[in-house]
Amino acid sequence: MYRTTGNSTYKQYAESCLIGGAGYFGWNDFQYFGREASWAYIKTNWSDVNVTLQTRLKEQFRAEADAFYTNSKIQPYFIESSLSTTPWICWGTLGMNIGSSYFLLLSYDLFNDSRYVDVAYHNLDIAMGSNPLSRSFITGIGEVSPMDPLSNQVVWDNVTEPIPGINVFGSCVHLSFNNDYYMEMQSNYNNYPAVAYEGDPYPILRRYADDYHLVQYNEFAVGSQSAVAPALQILSKMGSNNLLSS
Image 1: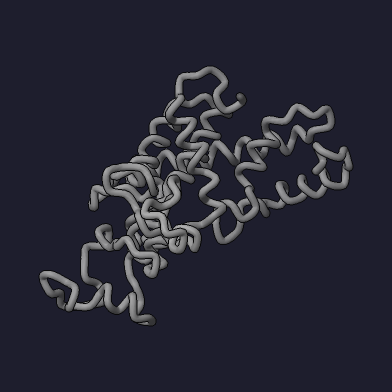
Image 2 (image 1 turned 45 degrees about the vertical axis):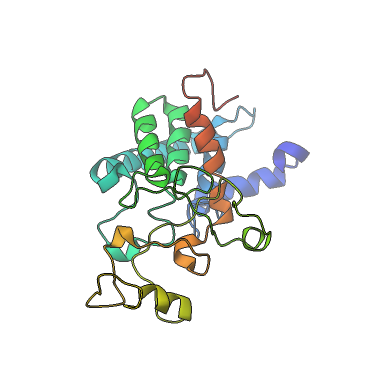
């Protein structure tokens, strides 16, 4: 709004949010677009830019990018999301690591550190099929990809193929027994071979079924989808000069 109107009130409020770190808190990475806003502020060349704030944000960006790099190198499948704490494996922590790829690419643009590109590719891989199920978690990509994401348009449009480019959550540690679909999914009537505890029927990273009724598997966050297209586009064209700036 400041760039559009020149009203300094918008600039002051935006800076106060960045100074207070509000942009980095929320129920998902895109609630306040904190990383994207920080990246944009670091890149700005306004005559009245707060240089001290730019420096602080750049240091914060670098520290987080290094943490993403380190986590990606030590985790199975080279993804940034932790797989060591099993209750955290849900709601997209496995299938939606493209958000991490996007952040790492923004970091590469700032610091020209090729390590970030390396792990950006790795964080893309698991959604593209480098996972225990050997399947894609993005509609329209791969030989085996989601056909039934939780989207009213996809469910009711009477078209067999879903809208391409939807990155669903993927595998999840546990489905509760609070509705019929979850119960049927985990029932020994549908498990072969039968399991000792129906609530945990498969190895965690293989717990997925392509059915929109199974929310933890096939829902997607609209805000998070905004990382999928640019990350795929950038990585498909790596090597072009000033790619992000253009």
